[in-house]
Amino acid sequence: MNAPVQALFQPFSLGALELPTRVVMAPMTRSFSPGGVPNAKVVEYYRRRAAAGVGLIVTEGTTVGHKAANGYPNVPRFYGEDALAGWRQVVEAVHAEGGKIVPQLWHVGNVRKLGTEPDAEVPGYGPSEKLKDGKLIVHGMSKADIQEVIAAFAQAARDAQRIGMDGVEIHGAHGYLIDQFFWEGSNQRTDEYGGDLAGRSRFAIELIQAVRAAVGPDFPIIFRFSQWKQQDYSARLVQTPEALAAFLEPLSAAGVDIFHCSTRRFWEPEFEGSALNLAGWTRQLTGKPTITVGSVGLDGEFLQFMVNTDKVAQPAKLEGLLERLHQQEFDLVAVGRALLVDPDWAVKVRDGREADILPFSRQALMSLV
Image (tube, rainbow, N blue to C red):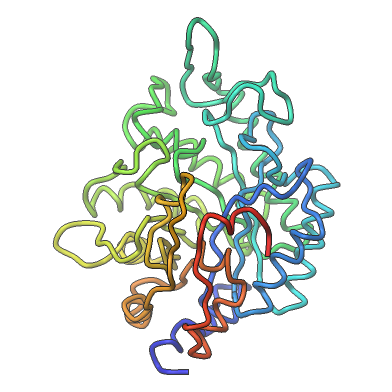
């Protein structure tokens, strides 16, 4: 193993969380859990990655126990004893291979459409009400609704700890519920949960505080955030390092241990005048460990595969990524599609077998391997 590659396979520790490598499996919605319950195929899917050098698995988004949390068919739940029993089997399989695993706790918010399982009559929930042709399509959340969702996240975190998970990741990115509160375009509230970015961050801060209270001081909390949104890939929540610091510091103080900084292309600088990416700036500003992510290991970024296409993404060189990791710009590296299609990606990189890494095409989304 050459010196630059070695940086990816150094252990990482944060309190009780000890990872054998710096490779993280990024959360990727797979929709292979009928009824919301992870099955034997899901167990094997995660086990194979842990067995092949992934230090930390962040599961696909798992919905918390709120009636409007889900937005898609066959995604897993993180509530109900049947679903939790399925996740316990995943945990045991990953731990048997020496890996660590955290669930990504998720509420889709106003992305949810009428007709979606489990209750087709429930509309999307969001910071602000939305009507279309006189029909309610997004329920504007009351303060009681906000507290109900916060309680659902806290309970999910408590359940994650109970079944042996190694921490939790809170999904605060990509235009889903928590991010909808951050984003001025979707949060038109005039109460304390709206207004400037500090007000729009209140929901997330209270939610993180509730999760921290539920799990105690030593259970790791990862928070995923992004500048870009599903609805606007060019969106930017903040424009300067100073504004990023003002946004992140209250989240950090609320209880975040690790920031998962979602970008489309990890190599792009976040602000003019510095080569640091979003994870690099976040680490520098908060002093907390960070996870970088965004088209790692592939020569084409993910958006081109969001539509029907016959394009294929080939394995990409990792020298630039490894140099940044070696220089401690960030602490951990999340790999998405490259790991989705090739469970042995990490060991192939470690052993210098890049030529054996499988290319990614949309076809890979059709099955669990």
